[in-house]
Length: 388
Image 1: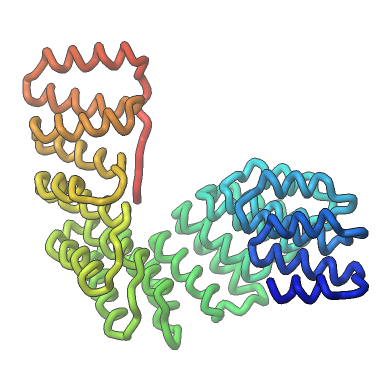
Image 2: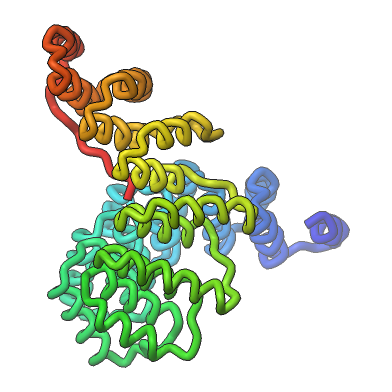
C-alpha cells in the first residue's frame, strides 16, 4: 500500500476511480485508519467506496462501526445488507442479523445464505431450518452453500428422519453432491444422525478423503458407540498421510471418552504434543478429564487439570466434580468444588453436587451448612453445562 499511496500522491489529477481504489486497498489490507482518512477526503463518493468501508470494518470485527457507516449510506444495495448480516453472524449477534435481513427491501440468495449459515454456525439449527423453509416459500432455489448450512443444522438437531428428507431433497436437486464440501456435509449429517450405513456408502464412494470427511465418519462411529472403529479409521487416516489438526484430535479423544478407551486416549493425547507439536486445547483437556473420570482415575484427572497451562475450564472441573460424586471421593470433591466456587460462584449445580457428596458420606451438618450458603446467595436453579 505504500507504493500505491505514493503513486496516488504523485497523480496530477485524481478521479473517483482512483480515490475508490485507494480506499479499497486500505480496507482490504485492514488499515481502516488510512481508509477512513482517504474516504473523508474524497470529493465524490460512490457505492463501491461505501461498501469497501463496511467490508473492511466487518473484517476487523467492528460491527458497531460498520453499522454506523451503513446507516449513513445514501443508497444501500443488497450487497451492503449482506455484508453486515454476515458480520453480525460471525460476531454471534443473530438477533441483529435477523432484524437487518428482515428490513432489507431485496433478499437475494447470498443474503439468505448468510443468514441460514449464521444460524447454523451459531448453534441455532432450528432457526436455520425455519429460515430455509421461509426461503423456499419465497421461491428462492438453494445453492450448494445453503445446502451445506442446512445439512450442518440437521446434524446438530440429530433427527434421522430429517436427515433422510434432506438427503432425498439434495438428490432431486441440480446440485452436484460429488463436490468435496457438499459430500463432506452429507456424510457428516448422516453420521451424526445415526445413519452410519448411508454415511459409509457415501464415504466409500469418494475417490479420496480429506480431514473433514474422515472426522465426520470418526465422529459418527463415536456417537454410534463404535469406539474401536473410530480409532481404526483415525489410524487409516494417518496411514494415508493426512496430518491431524486440533479438531481431529478433539474428535478422536471424544471417541475414546465415549467408549471408555483410557490407554488409547492417553496415547492420542501424548501423540498430539510429542509427534505433531500441537498445543492441547481446552477441549482436549476436557475430553481427557471426562475419560479419566468415567474410568475412576480421579487423581489422574485432577493432576491433568492442575498441570494445564490454560485458563481454568469450569466445565472440565464440573465433569470431575460429577465423577467425585459418582465415586464418593469426599476429599478430592471438596478441592474441586472450591475451585468451581471461585470460577462459577452463581452456579448452583456445583453446590448441589458437593451437597450430594456430603450426603453420601453421612456429613449431614455440611449438607445443612452448604444449603444455607446457597440460600444466602439466592441460588435455586441448576444450569446445565456441556463441552461436547
